[in-house]
Every structure is written in structure tokens, then in C-alpha cells.
Length: 99
Image (cartoon, rainbow, N blue to C red):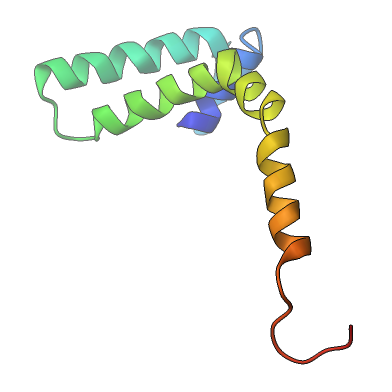
């Protein structure tokens, strides 16, 4: 659900179709709105067929990631990568091998 929401957020004018009904197409933005509306209604009304909370959480995470998360995570990764490389290069070698 996260991937679908991320793609629909990134390319809202993209065209989607249901696999068994390819003649009916709709925009990705409209699909995302419909999915969020259905899952919200399912949570409020207590429908048990799908886990609506999981779908809604995945959709909201996909929207958040495209809107804020990608930039937040990838622009702030350098300190973590430096620490990781220092741990990997300065750690004592275990086992056999030449050095």
C-alpha cells in the first residue's frame, strides 16, 4: 500500500486500471483518494473484510515519504554513513586472513 500511495502521490496524473476491467481507467490521484476514503469509512464503520487500519497507515506513510521523508532521510544520512564506515574500517579483523 505504501508503494502504491507513493507512486500515486508522485505521479497523480498517471492512468491506472483494475486488472480484470482494463477498459475502465482512472487517474492515480483519484484512486488514492478513493482508497483513503474507503479505508477511513471501513475503520469508522467497523468493516472486517480488510484490515483498513493497515491500508490507511501504509497509504499515509507513502504520502509522507514522497512529500517529506525522502528529502529528510537522504539529506541527513551522511553522519550515519560516516559512523558506519569508521566502525567498519577501524574495527579489529576477526578470523584468518592476510593483513
